[in-house]
Length: 195
Figure (cartoon, rainbow, N blue to C red):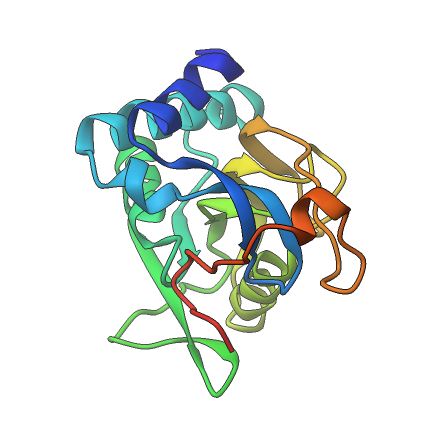
């Protein structure tokens, strides 16, 4: 599966949007990838995560991952599917008072080799926060993964980051927009809504 094949899944699911978008980070962008719309189709989720899992296994080796941990909410489906593809348990961390924690009886066995799995990485902030949570709970984060790396390899999450596709999508501060973007009303299609 090449980059164009991956992006075609997004296009076919109506998940590759163009306009003026407010990202979770607060930055503005002319392009938005709504991963949830791709992952709502089990066949697409399976195909994309199977390819990503194959790349991780080819690099790290068979059985290199004991547990997949993903940040809720966006990472839950992709984390579950990565666990299924890698044949290991998958759990998720949730924000409580702004910090990632494990709830619902989830635990990380001491020394577990963990893959932190996201749907999309832009600035890497939520990835780094989830990785810190995993490490604080005794897990060894051997790698991170995402379906789409919007930084196209520029972001550093502190561990190797495996991305199914990298694309450099411009992102701007709200007070420094190019004229063509400033002329379009901004929308926040993600899960956190406008603040």
